[in-house]
Image (tube, rainbow, N blue to C red; front, side, top):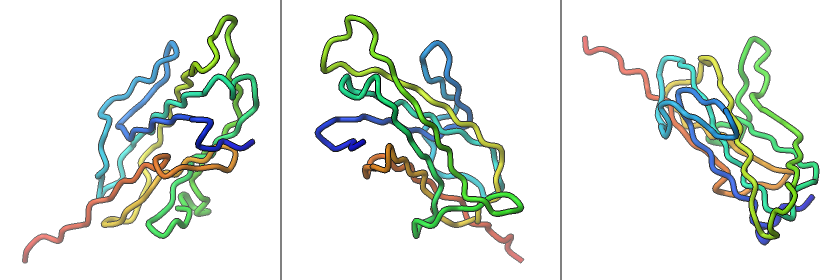
Length: 150
């Protein structure tokens, strides 16, 4: 499915210390940072998809992946598997919903500490049905290790 600019899919993403979805709302704790480390720390990503009326009642699929500054997927764990989350979803249109309205769909992803290289820049990139936008990127950096003065 083509999620072209004229169809106005809206997405809000935020890095936080923790996130959860409850009663249709996104709750974040310690949100809005873009610098972490150098030691591994747990973190979360909160996303609010705003699904336009004409894309309701249709199957869509999003992919959220972590990449480095060169756009290369970041591997984690013993197998260095690329870190990515994928989900197929369909937002139903409630009776009486006005044409042109948006339906929010919040999502929260919590991650344990992961060893990311200090002094680097990373980015979470989102795509929906293979389509992406510049503002569907969430960048952050890891602090460099500072050696104590001798």
